[in-house]
Length: 67
Image 1 (cartoon, rainbow, N blue to C red):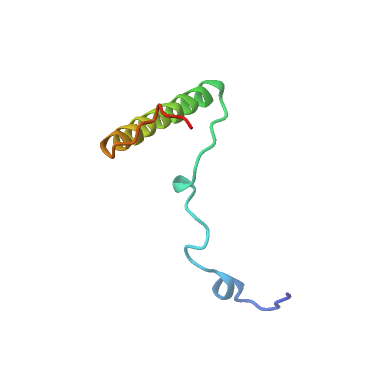
Image 2: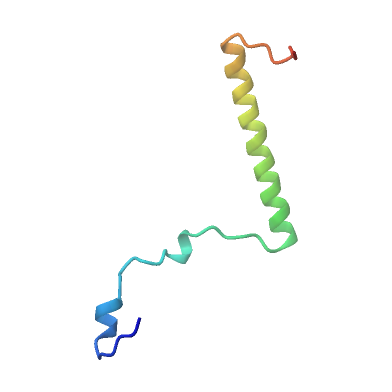
C-alpha cells in the first residue's frame, strides 16, 4: 500500500494500538532472575496441587486409589 500525502501522522496514527512496555511480560535474562522465577512457578504449582487435593478430599475422592 502506498500513500502520498503530507498528513500521514494524522491519517495513520492509532492511539493505544501498541501496548505500554511497562505492562508487558518481562523475560528474565540473568541467572538469578531465572532461578527466582522457576522457584516462584514451583511454589505456585505446589499451592495449586494442595488446593486441588483438599477439594478432592472434600468431595470424597481418594487420590491414592489407582486403577
